[in-house]
Image (cartoon, rainbow, N blue to C red):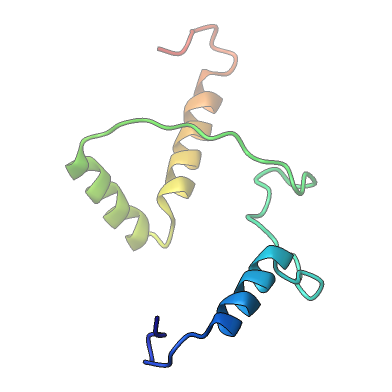
Length: 97
C-alpha cells in the first residue's frame, strides 16, 4: 500500500496508526467555540425553537434577494414578520388563522 504521495506504508506505519486511532484524539488543547447567540437576552446556551415551512422556490429566491438588499438574513426577516403578526393579534380576541 502507498500513501497519496507514493510512499510505501509499512507494517510499522500501520501499527502506529492503529495505536493512534485506538487511543483517540488528544483533546486537552482544544478550546470550546461559542455557538449561535441566544435570541432571548440573558439565556445563553438555550436553544431557540425552530419552525419550518414550505414556500415556492421563486418566493424563497425573492425573499433572499430582498433580505440581502436590506442587509438582513432570511431568518431575521421572518422573525420580524412573525413578531409583527403576533403583536397585531394581541388583544383582538381573534384567533390566528
